[in-house]
Image (tube, rainbow, N blue to C red; front, top):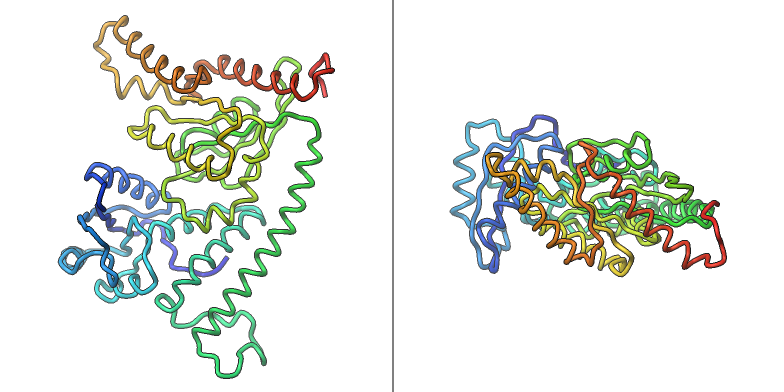
Length: 395
C-alpha cells in the first residue's frame, strides 16, 4: 500500500461543508453527520464544523477567503491536526488550503480511501485499494507532491529531458497498469471459483454501509462474519452455502454503498461488485431507524442501476425495527396506536416494493423466520424456472 497522508488515531479534525445551489442547510448537515462518522471510523475526533453557502466553489481554495480566515483563527492555538472537506478537492486546492492553514487537508474521497486501506485484508482488496489510491493521486500530482519515491530506481528510469513531475506521472501510470494486470489475474481466479459453484441459486446482501448486512449474514448462515458499528466493516465479499428446508443456495455479504462514493473506488472494486451483478436475488438491507433511510435507499438503488442490477428480483429488508420504534414512537402511546403506526409504515413499503418487503431486527432476532420464508420462496421460484424438470431442490 502506498504511503499517503493517512489519519492517525485520535487526531482532532475540523469538517468543512459547502451548501451548493438546490441544496438545503439540513441536507448539508446530514452529509457532515456522515462525514463525522467516516472520520470517527478512520480514528479522528471531530472538533467543529464549518459550512458556507456558495454559488460556485472558489477555484483556488474551494471556500471563500472569509471562511478560510475564520477556520484559520479557530485552529490557531488548538490541537487540530486535519481539515476534512466533504467535497472533492483538486491537488492545487489542497496545496493552497494547507499553505493558508498550515494543517493537513484531505477530502471525502481521501478519507474513504484511508478507511478502505485500513480495512483491506486480502490480496485482492489491497490491490483494489492501491489502484484507487493511485487513480486518485494521478490528476493531483502537480498540486500534491514535490516528488514520488523512485519505485523503478536505477539507470534508465528517467527519460531524457523529463521533468520531475513527468517522471512521477510515468511511475504512477506504470503502477496503475501493473495493478490492473494483477487484478485481472485475481478476477480470472475469482470467476473460475464462481463458475465452480455450479447450479446453485445465488443471493447477495446489498445496502448502504453499516445497515446490518453482516449481522444478518451471521444469523442466516450461522457463521462468524465481522459485524461492528463502523462504516465499511466488510470489504471482501464473503460467500456461504445455506440450506433452508432441503433447498440449498449461496449467500454473499458485499461491501456497503455510500453517497459520494469515489468513482475510481467503484471502478477498482468492480470485481468485488461482480458478486452483486452475478447474483440471482438481491436482499436490499435498510437501516429503517436511520433518519435519512429513504435517501440511503435512493443511493443504493442508483448504484444498482449503475451496475445494471436494478431489474433483478429484490427483497427489501427493513432492519433495526426495534430501534425505529424507540426513536419514532412515544413509549406512552396506547398499544393500539403504536400498532397502527407500525402497520402504516409496513403497508406503505409493501406497496412501494410490490409486496417484496420484510421488517426485522437482526440483533433482537425478530421476524427472522419471515425473512427466511421470503428468501426460500424467491429461491425455489428461481429453481423452478431454471430447472423445470427437477422435482427436488437437492444439489
